[in-house]
Structures are given as C-alpha cells and as structure tokens.
Length: 170
Image (cartoon, rainbow, N blue to C red):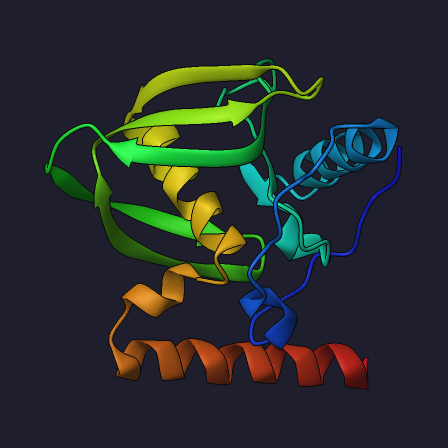
C-alpha cells in the first residue's frame, strides 16, 4: 500500500468529473487500498478518488470511531429517501482546517459496487448519509465550499492560498 498525495483547494483538478469504473480489477483494488491508507493517515472519514488525482468513480469511507467499518463505493449512486434535510458541520481533507455547516438530506439510499465489484445497496442516515453525499459531490467536481456564500467561499480561498504560500516558502 502507499500514501497518496491529497489535492487541496483551489486546485482545478478537484473540479474534474470522475469517469465510471468499467471493470473492478487489481488496479482498482490497489487504488482502494491506497485510498483507505491515505484516508486513515490523514484522519479523515471519507476520501474520493478525485481528491488523489484519480478521476474515476471510487470512494472510501469509515465513519466508525475505531476504523473498524471501511466502506468502498465504486460507481456509487444515491437517492434521497425523503425531502428532509439538516445542516451538519463538514470538513474536507482537500480543505484542511476549515469547517462549515452544510445542509444535506437526512436519509439516502445508496447503490454501489464493493471492492470486488459486487453490487450492494444500503440505506443511510446521520453522519453516514452526509458523508456519502459529500464524497459523491467530489466525483461530480463539487466541493462543500460551493454551498457557502460567495463571501465565505472567498475567505476560504484566501486562507488556502496563504497556506500554500507558507508551505512553499518553508
């Protein structure tokens, strides 16, 4: 396994729409393993392939407290189970150290392929439902800051540009 570099906002590659996975093979399984290792190392609960500059429809997540429940979502698709939404504070490995309230559907139905290419479905609520929607957005080239006001989004952009300059100067 290998740690993968995580792209950070405002990198334009984060805006790339991911292509479907045609066949789940050893290359895709290796990507999944590397993404899980990267996500855990970065102390995240979800990671989309787009965030590691692989533009394929692959997501890994684990919302458990002890990293005991990894989920693999290949070619995921979700539908809201009702119209109810609630805001939840979100963060993102591609936008470190910034959090904001984002309203999302409370309950969703997910269909995806697992690490071996087997189809599965599940109904999710709470944090898992929010995480599914957040990570799915990445596959569409959407970031959680896109849900913020232009003023807040501009503040985040300036903060990230300052962060990148400090890292380059170090």
